[in-house]
Length: 126
Image 1: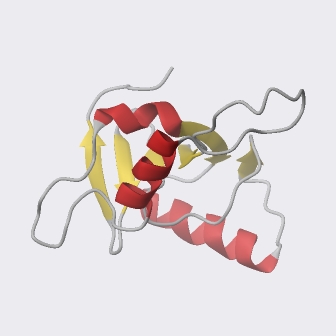
Image 2: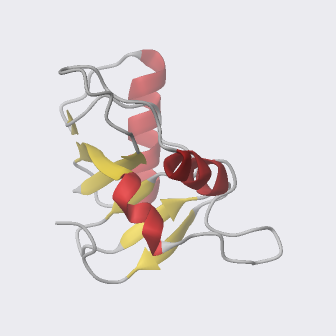
C-alpha cells in the first residue's frame, strides 16, 4: 500500500465548510518543491522538513512500488477510470512533482521530474 500526500496548506477562511486560501508560507513551499522537486539541478537541497505541515494524505494506492502507484494513479485520474485499488481520502489532482509517497516501510519519497527521491527512512506522519 502506498499513501499519496499532496500540499494542501491553507489558512482558515473562518467560514464553516469553506476552505481557506493558501498561506504565504504554504505558497512558498509550493513554489519551492511542487514545481522543482526536492533539489535544484545542481543538487542543492530545496526540501525543508518545515514543509511537512502543509501535506495531507489524499489517497491510498494498493500496489507494491512507487512506479506502479504513479502509473495507476495518473492513468485512472487522467481518464476518469475507477479502480478499486485506489482509495480516495480527500479531493486531489494527478500525482506530480512535489507530491509525497509513503511506502509500506513508512519511508517517505518525493515525486521528482524523473523518478523519486527518498526524504525520510522513518515514519514522519501519524
